[in-house]
Length: 239
Image 1: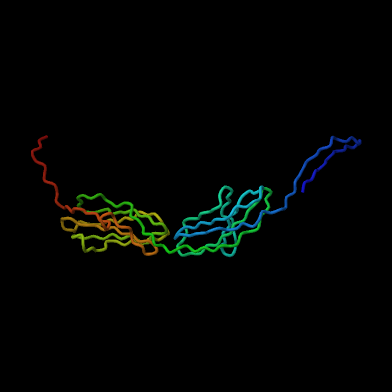
Image 2: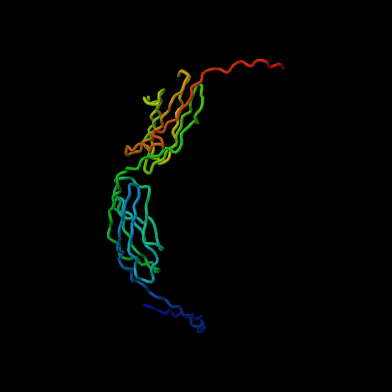
C-alpha cells in the first residue's frame, strides 16, 4: 500500500519546524511464476526459452544453474525471452530454472527445473593451416598445423610417404589440456632421407574420435622435395 511519512523538528524552547512529508509505496507482491517454453541442445550448447510475465513493474529474469545441488545465478536478462550457453561438454547433463524480479526487488516464484542433456559430438575438427610451404629442403622440415574443434582436440598426427599412398607415422602428439584451438609442430630430420619427393599427411582427431574434415581433393597432404646437393662452386669471379 501507500504511506505518507510526516516529520517535524522541535527545539528546546518549543519552536516547531515546518512539516516535512515523504510518500512511500510498499510493494511485497512478487511476480508470477515463470513458465518455460521449448528448450533445446546441440553437442556443445543449449538454449532456454520462457513466456513473458504480465506485471508492469517487471525488472529482469534471473537465469539460475544447479551445480552440486545448489542453484546459482549465471545471468540477468531484461530484454529477451531466451538464454544461450555455449562451450558445453557433449553428452552431459545441465539443470536450470528461471525466476523473475520486480523493480522493488521482490523475487517471484521459480520456474520448474529443466534438465537438459547435450548431444553426442559428431562434428569433425578442422585443419586450418599447414606448413611449411611446399618447396625444396635439405636437412630438416619444420612441420606444423593449426587445428580447431567445437569441443576439444585430442591429438595430431604427422605421417610421411614416398609414393603418396603408404604412409609411416612421424609423430603423434596428444593434447594435455582441453583446447578447441591449437598449433602442433614437429621437427623432422631429413638429412638421411634420399633425394626426391616426399609427401606429408596432416591429421587431427577430437576427444570423441572424429577425424578432421578432408581437403577439397581428399586428405590434407603436402609434398616436399628433398635436396642434399650442394650448389656449384662460383667461378669466373675476379676481385
